[in-house]
Amino acid sequence: MVPHRVVVLALTGLLPFELGIPHRIFGRARDSTGTPLYEILTCALAPGPVRTDADFAIDVEHGPELLATADTVVVPASYELGPVYEKGRLTDELAAALTHIRAGTRLVSICTGGYVLAAAGYLDGRPATTHWASAEHFQGLFPAVRVDPGVLYTDDGDVLTSAGVAAGIDLCLHIVRRDHGAAVANEVARRTVVPPHRDGGQAQFIERPVPQPQLASTAAARAWVLDRLHEPVRLVDLARQEAMSVRTFTRRFREEAGISPGEWITGQRVERARRLLERTELPMEQVAREAGFGTAQSLRKHVQAALGVSPTAYRRTFRARGRTATSPDGPSGEGGSEH
Image 1 (tube, rainbow, N blue to C red):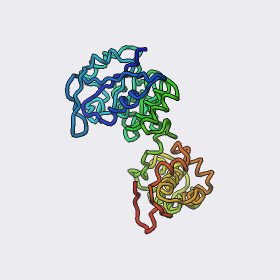
Image 2: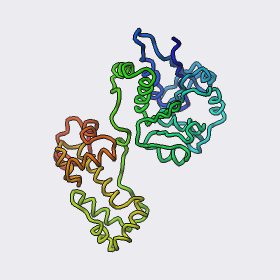
Image 3: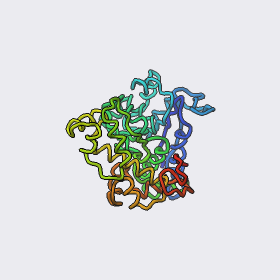
Image 4: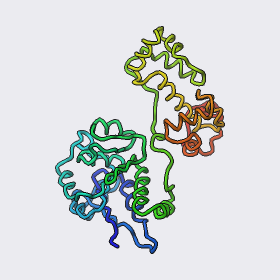
């Protein structure tokens, strides 16, 4: 059997870790006789040295003509995409390289490698993702793409995209599983010492700082409620902090924060729960009470909806090793966390 050929496109400024993901995952896939199931090759826009974002370059033997032989093309992230990232436009050299790709070739991006696929028009009308920190910029640059910032990867048949960095491992394992079944993918995962499937998406990794609206007419109410997240909060009480009617307050709040007061409070309670889950060993019922959700069932419902994983799974992933605090600020009251 002729192995499926995967060609990885190495662009200037690439991340060495991401470049290695396809070689590591696809390169470990074997059939029952030990025969490799994939052939993995690397090409660049021109043969020769390609600068990485580290303190070394890599020497790439093949030029873009190799793309014409690919069954799957993988585009890892680069920190030097230039007009691709800034304007959503391919350079002439990159556009010429992509013309070598045959119709029907499977296309895969890792992290911001999705900018290349989007700029080439491959993602128009399709679901896609990228690193959560770039998702808003990505959507603004490519409005025709259906961006989902909360998932680890998307699969639209012949076009697949992954979120940031290690999500490329999740996507490549998914492709092996899709091509050759769970047993092969599980063996690759075992040899790579990673889980064959991770719970949830990248929503659990997204930082959600308290919004800093341009206007400040409801700032006092927000500060007031942050000190009372563990208590029931009525809309009329919030409006009273700003000496406004409920109707005026609700309108002003949405103008400033972009969401309703109720949605904002729920989001802040989820953030409070995240800190408690990460930094303390409090039982779930107490986390629920201190975050303002009342019961562990309500906590599970809201954390699952916001982060894509249960509170228990989130704590297992992010709990700082060796921390024995019983309050979100640590045993001596100091802030910060140890990860």
